[in-house]
Length: 372
Length: 268
Image (cartoon, rainbow over all chains, first blue to last red):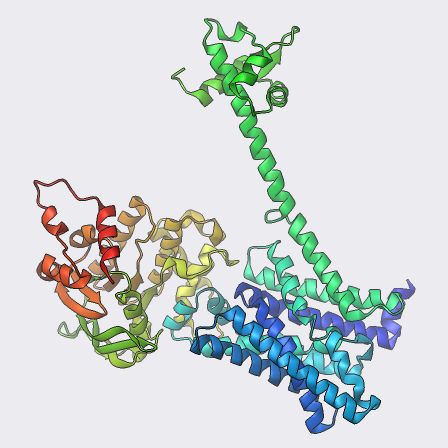
């Protein structure tokens, strides 16, 4: 209960929780498109590439106001994503290689600049390294307002251009044939992704931010087959993870917010992968097991029928379980017979020999066919 | 535009190159209105690229494209497109109805969402291709032939005067192929023009009345009855194309699979 009241009264906790939820919402929603367009790694490249932008923005302006740093991050992230597209378009280098190259180059540059700033400007200016792994506790009202405004802008554009982005993601060639400027739409959607990433950097950090893009979307994909629901659910997963991560880290001393948020969201993803009703691993296993059992039952039933069919009065002829075992050595014969008995398709005589019931004979005839 | 002398599609001096390599070289092609035309040629001949260049999806190095007498950019609304089925991710989270309604996005323009009218058009297109039962199906649950029907329905709602279809018969069963052919002929009856990238030499005479043979250069473009000859096929596919002679009534019909392999292999 104190936690709940803290959420409303404790200024720091409220700011951190709201900021984390907002970043999760926006990153989740945009991440859904990134994942569908197989651009998951672009998010990784953009977030790493934002680091030099943040440091450069500080070096040039000397200011640490959120809007300045976020602008620097966005410009660098944007430049990196355009550079990736350019490399892929103009050379034989494939997307994954281009992403790897650009990511590490920008990140290396960022680390270099960061150490320059820290050595020259002294400890007072050292706060920039919080962008590496994120430090949600440093969020203040100003940050929250910037994050919310940018996040709202992203979501409004996404809603307005919904139809265009859907078409771009599903069938860009067809979009082009209808006269939509595919490349510009691509750049616009990527720009929204860049903004979604940079508003999370202070909280989650450049190293882990890509998980906020990928994980909620991967989780949401497990639960739905509709784009609208996917984006909404992905945003919700992101927001809830942000909120839970922030609250959890406030409960335990020295628990860092960014990594906690990431662990929450990846837990959600893991559970979704396991438990989702149709796409989940467990559901698939169950389906496979059910299928195997059906095959086993039918194979035992068919064997029993073939044996019975050799006699004049089929129903009356019981058979030894070993005879069945020789016919189908790999099928779990006893388990199969038990299943048949449960379905009243076969019965065991007191001496342990088995025969088909009338219903079992009928099924056997269907399975084996009239030939035997 | 009803002028019968104006071709539905006029391609002049079209050249496309990827890097140094010319993919299409100086293509001239006129397609009269109301024709069903096949584009044929060996693998790598540039058939798909020709369609994409006409639709402005790959930038041409030179040349121009006119649709019913005007530059393509001004006539986009008159044009419908069926891309190769394999060009999209069929695991995309959307429904059959949704995909078909995408055919109206061009007419809708920016930002406006599809509504009742688009829905009704999509439903009647789905009925035409025999996919009514699949309206709300997730697209990943469709077979290859069903996917192709959905793409055709999407093109139908475009209500275009000229259609470009990239291998609509690729990987569909015989029943679907017949259904598609019926549909194409219906479109022609309505005075529309349909340009189809096609692979099966056996069915050309049955399905099409116009043909363009292509192998980087345009080999020939004209009525099937006149230009679909062994000589021209030889020019397009390089090598001896004697299977047309084998089609003489006394001979057993050639295995279509053989024909496929024959011309798949010939090109250097």
